[in-house]
Length: 296
Ligand code: ZN
Image (cartoon, rainbow, N blue to C red; front, side, top):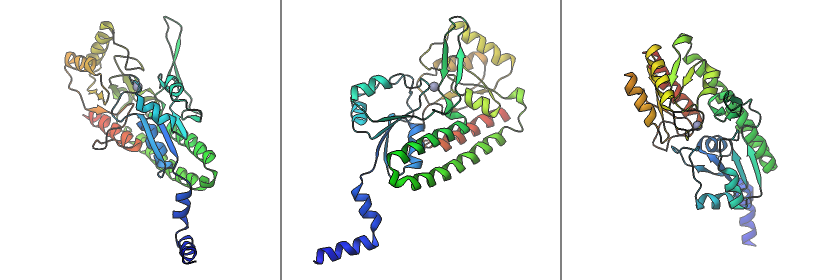
């Protein structure tokens, strides 16, 4: 009897702690750290893992046996889509995961590149660098979480509304950061072609020695063309990325006589000690780093 009294007391004063015990936190897996952060913002109580760790290159990633395990135990799996995770289908098959796979970029208008020589078209996956696209990602994430846990739909909705407000402010802030820099001076060189969506949204032209994947090797002709353009247009804003391979870019900067202006975060967040542990921080850091060099 005493036990029931105690239970009644608990239920009266700590109802949420009892509910929390009855439904274990959702196990969510995202393919890369940028997406992991967006999901964690809407579902802070869920266990949200990432396959590609911070500071690693998703293009060149090789899944490990522990990734197979992570997917096998997941409730929901979130991917960027647009061909970004070339390794995901094999990984899902190996894990036996039969649950829902959510494509975060589902409602984004993708950029398609046409190879004039082969006639083949490729899709540029780096849509998250336009903050308006990030808002679309968050909307997809919210729909999926509400469907998976209808009992918590209102909580997810409230967090989503508040996070989207922050993202709208971020988008506005980015627009303002480049206003005083003339359009023809907004030229930036980076390791690989990851910033087209960013450039299209905020009026900056990005150049790189390789295309949309870090796995391609630039040809000597591509390198020479870029060196000549850097010299001709007096481009000072040259950045490496927090990815593995930036030898080609260092060579280009050296040949053109320009020092590297710092590191941009392209396809992964920084680790916990770095300056870009969240999506919002990543955008802020990239913008301030680019702006500093363009203002010189
Ligand atoms: Zn990339």
